Length: 229
Image (tube, rainbow, N blue to C red):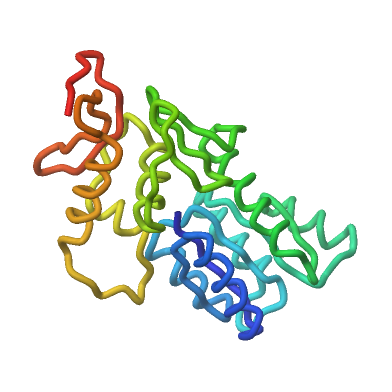
């Protein structure tokens, strides 16, 4: 899952980034409203953490512009402005949530999970495909009741795929979800991660859930035919 952090206080920005990355999120950051718009026009994000009082363009103007362009990316305002009028203004502009500084990071993470659940139409922390269960909050995976150990990037890929089960996802879509703008790795890394995921998710004798669509991408689904790995 990819998140954009827009916060002009650099120490706070770094602290938020560190917390999110520790939880397995892919994170981009910027420090003013104009830079935020450039990022939002150039990449797809699952959520935006947006400060209100910033240089060049404030958070209200940034949100207004992206909503005018019909961008429905979930936005959580992070701000010291705690009056009812400020909260009402932000929500009326199209914000999904509002968190007043100082805040607890556990609450921030819970609000991010809540926003992204709403966007995918799920109210649950657990999402299943056949006998595969992904617990978003615990960041755990099991199949047939047996726990499966995944590395952070593997979990991020699987989370994105289970949220979009049945949809063929391209290499570019997957790369955008798990790596930020600073990434400059090898172009075949997705293939490596997919190979590792298939070995862990689709064990010998199990019905195959992770499918390669040649020339297009990958899809997570339970086929009626029940092909076995």
